[in-house]
Image (tube, rainbow, N blue to C red):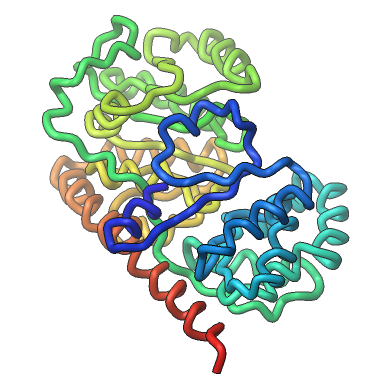
Length: 362
């Protein structure tokens, strides 16, 4: 949506195809036309066929779903070129955690999914690490044109964040320094490693709290809250639930650092969002944009283990104030260069214009 808004600002129109139900709350305020499709290959094919009547090029997001596979024949039939974002869905991580499902994917790849990549004008990766990990993920259809391009995250900067009330703290002291985790509560995020690492340092750094913000859709949070209680850290770990709007922006801006020691993150929207708010990031090397963070001095990187997470937190919390200031000053320029709306728009627009130009009749 953010990219479509930027395209509109430059005079381009957008239409979206979705298999979400008509009762979806997001539709009420969505600022662009949406063609709803039934969740079937034929339903998607009809919807994409309708969209093609007014479109010069298509942007396909994701893999392994009915929308992507159903859209392929309609795009081919209407001779509309497309670019495709895999969004990390070719990462070998998923082979390890779901080997049986990966075997099924090989069949889908050979029959349908691979054609969407090999037929694309460009397969766009959100960073170089994603492109590297995706190489030869499946047999066949590996002759696609791949390119790493800038990808955007919403700008979370806000004026006077200290003036924003944070009711999500539920009466807890909002003046104490804190490390912020903001993402969905899920085992993939390695929150258990983070909690154990924080527990090992809590006595040495008694003035720093840990804030865990995000939705818990699978009750995994209950297990983590029991862990916190067993560690005796209930007064140092703050659970806020999901946050949005100005509260989310203020939470980013007021944090000493943002922490995400995940086992796998293709891009990490929240990492780039933290940078936009001027907040250093502490992440694992399984967050695919970690090289951009290290090379530009905007944070620290660890392995996705408890020990390595603890070492990273200790290094950060022991950092001289001058070094912290330098790291903080590097955050916004890193966002502007790699993850801002403007940089992502320019990179994508170049690819869209190239797809249209290359597909035009000679």
